[in-house]
Image (cartoon, rainbow, N blue to C red; front, top):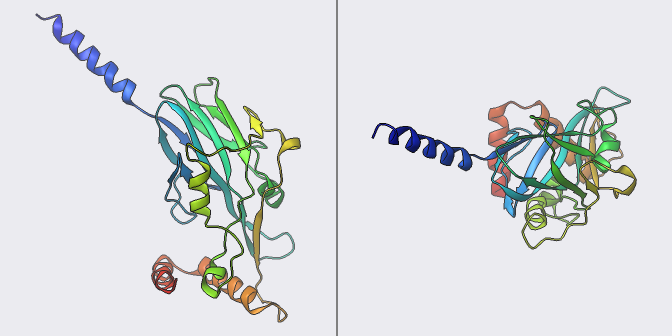
Length: 233
């Protein structure tokens, strides 16, 4: 009778271990958009760095999204890539890490954003089966939504569609990046100068001002602005 308890406990432990999920981690400069046809809530100001993944193959939409110093002034620029789709085969309770192929420090952010090249490794050093595909999905700007015009797509809707089970995404890279075959992705880089040029159009001027004040606002002001902006859409 005494030998039954350890066996029962062992079975329960093995069952619990098999139910545990793998984990994928991305750096601060990257943003999750969608997983297997479901939107992932994340942003630069509420960064989600980890997602849990069950065994099986998963499609994950990610984009490079960072704020960098301008090369010719003291101003700052937002840089966003088009989403890229990672197809990752998970075969156990592993910790996966996504990183830029060139290393932790991205030396030329604007060039990198045209077609982000990334690699995925396992913390235990095991083999990782994955593919990376670039897309040409462009995002409608916040200013376009406010002032009219349709210069892009809803990035969340497009990312959800690209990671759904029915989606067919052209694969550019397998296991490791291959820059020569990666198509150019869209880039959105808006410079925020200290003094706006007098020749800027009204829409460009408004967009730069919105982004400039957002960067310099505190959390309370940002929440109040977002509450107001959502009501206007």
